[in-house]
Image (cartoon, rainbow, N blue to C red; front, side, top):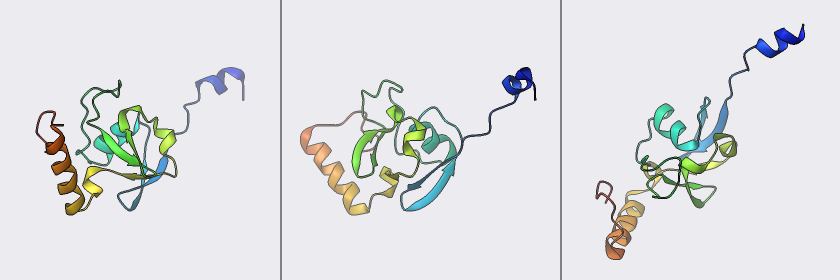
Length: 113
């Protein structure tokens, strides 16, 4: 193979595998975790409010048990991780979060609370 052929060969597609809401998933190449969740997996509870700045918190998910904004997580960092989105929370957990948001006056647009 010549140097020119090596430079023009398309890169192999990137596949990232992780556990999302209890199920193992494989996703293609995306700029960040939020894009993969919304565009490929159809999980839309994590919102895109400000990406890629990560300031608003609308896309918060649990990554290995820690709250993180998904628009700031390069997809390769999700490899092998456990992700929980709002869809993966139990009804009790969702109600608890909604009550805490309301009690603290932490509403943004009101869509999710």
